[in-house]
Length: 347
Ligand SMILES: Nc1ncnc2c1ncn2[C@@H]1O[C@H](COP(=O)(O)OP(=O)(O)OP(=O)(O)O)[C@@H](O)[C@H]1O
Image (cartoon, rainbow, N blue to C red; front, side):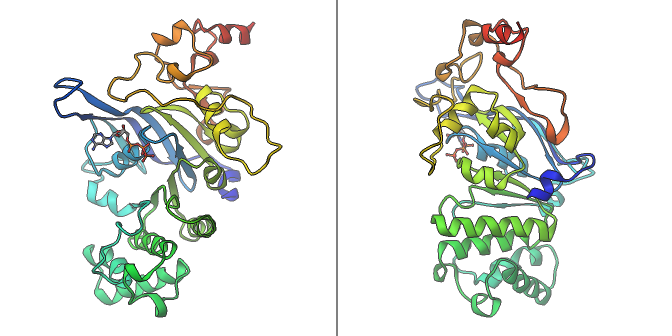
């Protein structure tokens, strides 16, 4: 992790997500015939080769939607994904070729595995589907079991119900690596695990990233876990990016009032830690009918009339680019916005 943070040289994006948008049509009902859940609305970001980019935000902000759009598991309403310089779904990079290079690990370790397949079969199955012989696929499964800390002689012939949650998640990680992917999307991979097991699985993920030269997109609502795992963090609120930047910088000097409130709301074992902002109160608005201006307006301690009409764009602070860019979507950081805090900051 530290190596990826400190590595010099130009930052090469492995993934570029441009304008990812997903509006789920709702069945006829309270909101009328053409109401849509705006789960993701114009989400832009890059994932740099070798880094861990975390996406954080409250439940329902669109984290999983973005990861599924990225994987091509559902069609976007609009937007596109570029992987290693090629547009996913184009003649240069067919969706199936891309899926071989990008794999996902989900929160529910049990539902992710076929209960009728042994552990060995579960891990060997994806490479066999992609043409590897049974013998080679099983040998690869055994190697990967060892890599995730499960002795193959002991575990290969077992079935998912014979393993603990942490062991099953190790198997899911091994299976995700079976096609030798370059990108792994980890969607709340430790949320269902006990705290002691969580730490072991997180450290395993850090080791595997180094060992296999992986790039991670790490989705979590746990800010302490994100601080431990990520190089950069993207904060989502109601389907949009509120802030993005290097994790240490965003945690030390959050620019968006939502990020500040999220950080102030996180549990701490340290009674001396002082809150730097009021914690989050209330719930986000309904994503079917988000506010027309800033999405955070109803909960924002800095909200002003201008925020009701103006949708803030993600704007960089300072001149840093690439992996060092720190940007937020809030009028209070824009001198020309008409937000009184912004003009006071400039004066
Ligand atoms: N298939 C679907 N049909 C309709 N609405 C959906 C669908 N999938 C997700 N949503 C809605 O889209 C919004 C974003 O959901 P998403 O699961 O992406 O959020 P999330 O941040 O991953 O939440 P959580 O942390 O609870 O998993 C939510 O309001 C959710 O109810």
